[in-house]
Image (tube, rainbow, N blue to C red; front, side):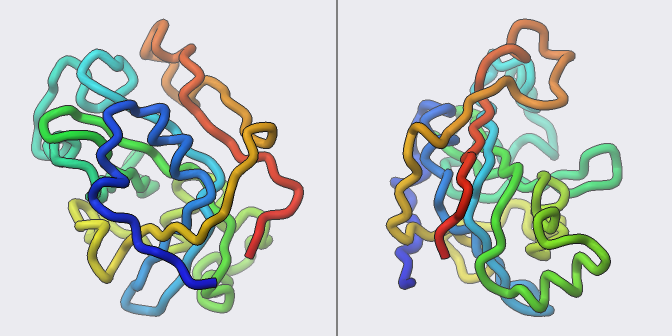
Amino acid sequence: MAGKKLTREDYADPRPTRAARFFLGKILCVQAPDGYAEGIITETEAYGGTKDAASHAFGNRRTARTEIMFAPGGVAYVYFCYGMHRLFNIVTGPLDVPQAVLVRAVHITAGHDLVRKRRAGIGEKDWASGPGRVCAALGITMEHNRHDLLGETIWIEDRGIAVPSREVQRTPRIGVDYAGLWALKPWRFVWKSKKFPL
């Protein structure tokens, strides 16, 4: 199915939860040195603004790592978690407003043979069923940090897939208990489909 690469305007929504919901059903595409793979985004989490105690930019924290979150939407924010797993985030919103959407899961739709090699010994349903697994399956590395998502290396497409509201589950974000009341906000979006398209 032919897709349309998202434009800068598609990343500009200043409301982090609307952005996180928007990316469900979009296709995350990665042209890595060892080949091409892609997947439908099926789970996201919103992180937004300097008041979000779960965000890396909480309190307007601007460091070498977090500075990319203050960029205009449409760039990649990739970081190490616990020094083990790479996590891929989509920077959204306007300049100087630190927002990002963490991609927590995708359903692989192309590059199956390549992903099978990358995820050797792991069943297909778990190839990209968590944020670290997404990066492992799609070949996303720290080299992708700060990449423009309108380029030819890593990008997101709209292929006209509609995600029914009745199939979207909202829950609190995972692993952010330190954030107090912010940890309770239902900013995680999960597409609970019995059969994904493509």
